[in-house]
Amino acid sequence: MKSLYALSLALLASAQAFGPARAADLGGTPSFAAAAPTEWSRFMVRVRAIGVLPDSSAKLNIPGSARVSSDVMPEIDFSYFFTPNLAVEVICCASKHAIKGRGAINGLRIGDTWVIPATVTAQYHFTNFGAFKPYVGAGVNYSIYFNEDGGPAISRLKLKNSVGVAAQIGFDYMIDEHWGVNVDLKKIYMEPKIRLTAGGADVRGKAKINPWVTGVGVTYRF
Image (cartoon, rainbow, N blue to C red; front, top):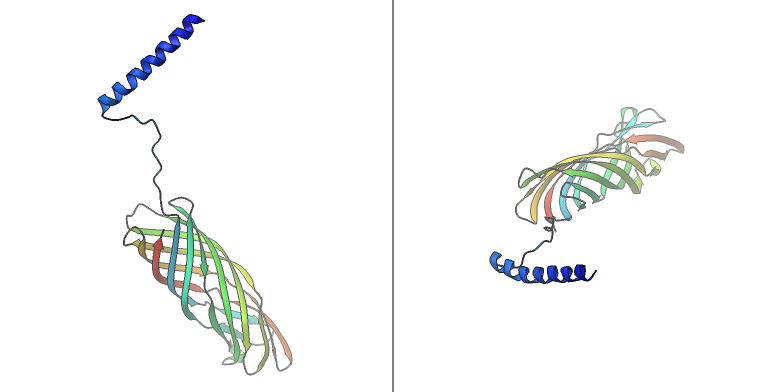
């Protein structure tokens, strides 16, 4: 036991003596710590000008149908990157659309409505093209309709909030570490139930708005 204790002390003394000498030979103190992983910017914000272009139709329980107008407005979105490739994006905007009759009620101004198309997408970003960073995404949309205003012949207009899926493709072109430009295209499936009162008659149906959403804007990563 004593010999084992003496051997331990000798080895410890040798290690202490060898460490500084070896470090001097190498020109510094050796480090056995693992290399830190490369960091990436986890947050991204974009400001875009977007066009909401409905591919619309509506089935009503009366002869005729309806269509929904397009709109252009500003939009802001936020992204969080879990890895350099995987991110989630949330968009925030509101648009106003006019609803007009088609077919047997062609030209009838049914009314207009505001909508917040709250959309969350999971994205995959390709990182092997340098400053050019394309991505694809898919997610869910919850559209909130508000401030519905019926036309002259409509005494009441109501659209029910709707849930649908969304698909996305786009790219960021980074000018430097933080700033870039963005081009984005989404297809959002929005099919709210619609109810209105015209001339005392209760009219119901389902609107298939299903817009293409095109956007161009500025990217900032931090």
